[in-house]
Image (cartoon, rainbow, N blue to C red; front, side, top):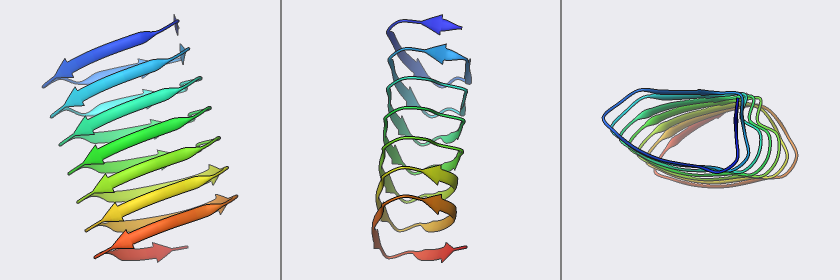
Length: 126
């Protein structure tokens, strides 16, 4: 139940943010993150880590390198730049702009506009 701006720089640790309201700017390196029930703008720069975003509402701008991401029940605009990773977005509503390089993607139950640029990867849309 955090309200307001949240600027967090975390190195080598595990973070669990739940029910956060407001702007969230997180820079995480080499760690697992679990964000659940986040409302508002979310700008996340993650390197070499595993992220699970669930029930996120609002704009989400994510730059992920060398990691595994599972996005579920995301509402709003999603702009994702992923390199060398595996992504499984499920139940996504709204605009989705995805640039993926060298990775495996599984898109399931996507509603709205979908703009995908994939290079050197395997895609399984279901």
